[in-house]
Length: 119
Image 1 (cartoon, rainbow, N blue to C red):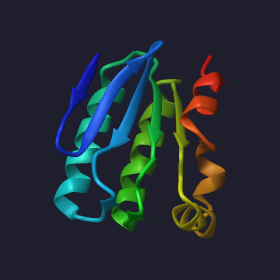
Image 2 (cartoon, rainbow, N blue to C red):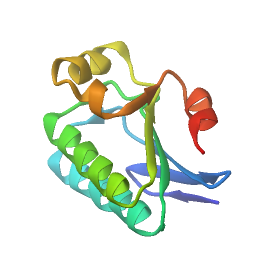
Image 3 (cartoon, helix red, strand yellow):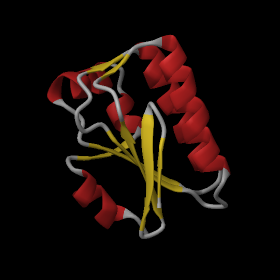
Image 4 (cartoon, helix red, strand yellow):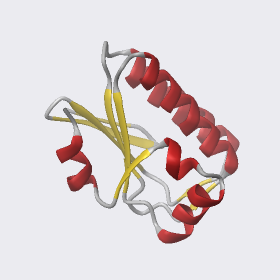
């Protein structure tokens, strides 16, 4: 089942909510707010959420978007769920390293390898 919006594509694959972005740049405040709202709804809709956020095709990410990811991480952790990030381009991964967010998040090279890590 797929739930496309103008900012996210959310699908269910083997009990894992896979989220992909519909835009290459995630820098607009309104878009980031919408993304946060939709991802939180996915997390809040599950007792023990299993969420994969794929950054395939994303070229730019603002610091506000990182804040949304941290919020999502915290909500998943409170519910004893799992959150993986995947398909992060080298420039965006550098931002994760600089901010030390690569230590907070579980990050896989590809969405396929991330899917294998869900329990």
